[in-house]
Length: 505
Image 1 (cartoon, one colour):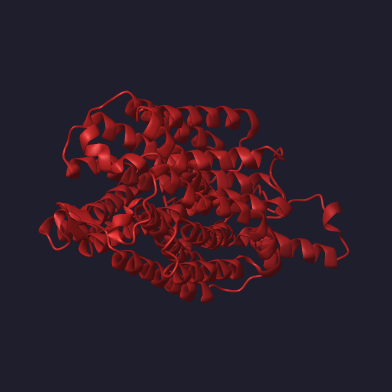
Image 2 (cartoon, rainbow, N blue to C red):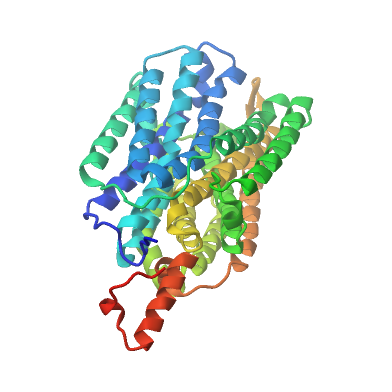
């Protein structure tokens, strides 16, 4: 039996590999954020109703949720670099389609294709695990995991500036250009990993998971329009439960499942994924609240009366701080382990939201809140892939991280639905327009703090492991652990492992 350990990289990567992979993650985040400045104008721009315009956002959410675990599994089977390039290529096609149309249906098709780029994050993390030495892996995975927030924070002011001064289609042309640049850099710099999972692609499992996710996320994103107690919303939720249960039973009987539910049910993997949902909820709250607070007119008594660009600049430190916490995470994790780093990150997020309740009276106060929460989210996001990688075999890295990225997306989707409902139910009608209130903003911050508290409880129940991921990376699967024990036994018998010329079965 051939065996490839994860103790050393399978193929040495250049110094440029990590920045190029992180850039791919930033491009994905830019694609997601670029519509934020023009959301309220979409019905006019597309000549459609507000309820139909929301499908421009919903379609990307659904396709991203479906594509993330599927692309991760395909990467494990056929090559992570190959699937990364495929994801970015589909995104570029979708961006160009959206850039060339003013009609609703082609725009939705284009946005659906753009959602496929979400698979870039777990694929990039998987490539890093396969190629990087242990001493570089911690900070590299932290940067890749945080890139989704980094790109979102940096893209917001840039997209606002473009939307204010040029035709809004330029946003999509810019996203397509970034996608082409990312593909070119990946082809030039990033080597393919030779590690492959055994088995075939589980097409029925992919279809079942896709159906279950769509049935669940569709009412989450559209429930405020349809009514949370409407037959359509409740019926879709019930159908999602049935489909996902049947899918789970089917996956347990498949020899090579799309998602190994037995591995997913392990304590460390399960708790990490649940904590990821809570981090996703807390991350999206600040992205929804602060831009609205900053742009509301000062005549409301609490709005800060800032332009779209200034509001984007005030929120941008959220992403910048996440980027700068990557090396900090590497040092903390090397000393205390990713579990402790996750707990520290969640505590900082909680302090940020608690302090933010009283820091809503000036633009500079929102910057302070953004920096603090960004630091906490950067540490928390950076810890998640290390916890997942430490609990799954190397051959399942792509699929496992894809599922973890999906959990974060579910968290942001739930956050969007809940906070949107809170702000709508607490708003005041001024001149026929619903205006969010300070009470609604504070309730939203309290919800985020509650999600952080749940995440902390989950993190405390994670098993303790040795720092720096030594056990996580050196013996990340049962097979690696068995090999390590065999080498020690040979060494104890007077046969140094380096002199052993047979094969360990």
